[in-house]
Length: 581
Image (cartoon, rainbow, N blue to C red; front, side, top):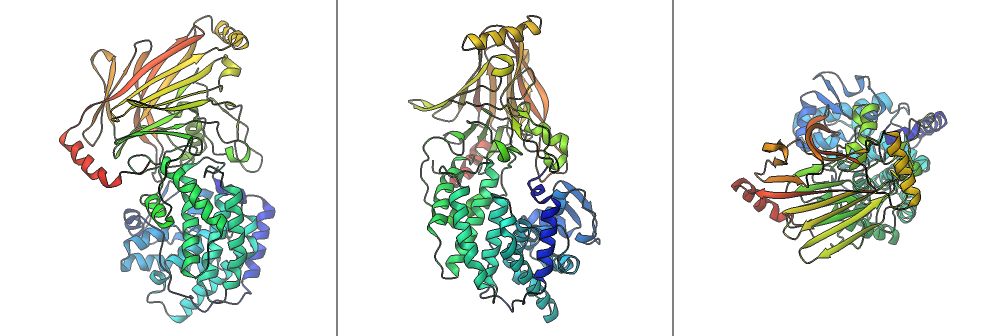
């Protein structure tokens, strides 16, 4: 289930509805204090699709050039939340022509007619905050050519939603929903005439949440890189709004930006996209660059892990490893069993990836995407290194349990490259083995050497290993080492099946080899993207074998074998994206 299910309880819905009903009686704003400047970035391509009548929201497509947005029956709450949050306004504004403006006006005033009386699922603190930000950002785009009654209705609705936020922001769950609600309230309070007094409590509350919700290392409990980017973006918007209003930004707010920025830089691949872990995607194109520039936080190196992730980078190659335990308790409802999984990007081209979050494609895809076999990691007997509990009654949230409890790691700078070493005990209880992984990236970024191990370390572990071995008829404990490839990678087994060659669209050729102790296969896989209608087919390299001793080692390499003229041109385009470590 999506994060929006936090508003699922009947009591919360009733309280939201009652507060929204009371908001109708509040005085309406008469205009803006100053001319709003849009800060959100939309997609021109998605905007063109919306203008053409193709409504693609939360993985569902509705094709109709005449049907209004609010006439469509929402297939699930994720679809409903996306249209209620009005992020589609960013895309229509990115197009910016008269057709896009008319569609945006039709949908916004359609919302006012349909839900402005305080009804509907959009009256939750996080969705209201998200919606208010978009309405204010694109107010000039929306109000262009509108008559006075329409303008009055717009300001009246914004005032009602602002008052609702002032009363209900505390009802938003800590984390991203609370940040959305408070940022929306600050935005509206500073922008609308007559609402100025509502901003001060929100500024103080946002500062407090910055101190309590952002970890000392600049991360979130969910360990979702894309969610961290969303929070960082909201904080930069709120800071900009305060500066433009001539107000100071609280110290805690500034400190949170200073902590988050280097963490996001460490989680950014060489192509500018975020590492896709724990339910997060690559991030909307351009948002990370824009947010980092707007924050004015200078680049600096980060010591140790970044929100639990280790980074190796050299020249045009980046490797990001999940190097700690998965999120626990309430933060784990969207967590993945991805400990020691890694992603690798060469220049602007992802090579090794994780399958991603499948929540837009249904419950089964969501569960599959969270499992260890959907990550570029070693799994034992097809099991995940963490197990899903039964869904929590009334919410559908499935928390991770029996996950790794210890993940010792080391990261070293070598004379000829960079090394990461880590281990976890996620399979110790059932199989008696500790999984260890060592990765070395050459200083020129052209070679990754890997070693994955299954180790029974002490007497108790060896007894569990022997028991698991006996239960399998002494045939050994099966394992699979998976390397999921991006859909744009063209891969083929070399003659004899001893290696896999992989061609990137940039023209680069990478070759995968191993030590010959395992069976090498090239199998189908999937790549799960939130903006797609269905999973994309891809390939995965699989090394399979059986552990019959207390120590099993699998050695492999990924090496860049060739760069064509196309790759050289790609390199030239990469230069402006060189990022500070």
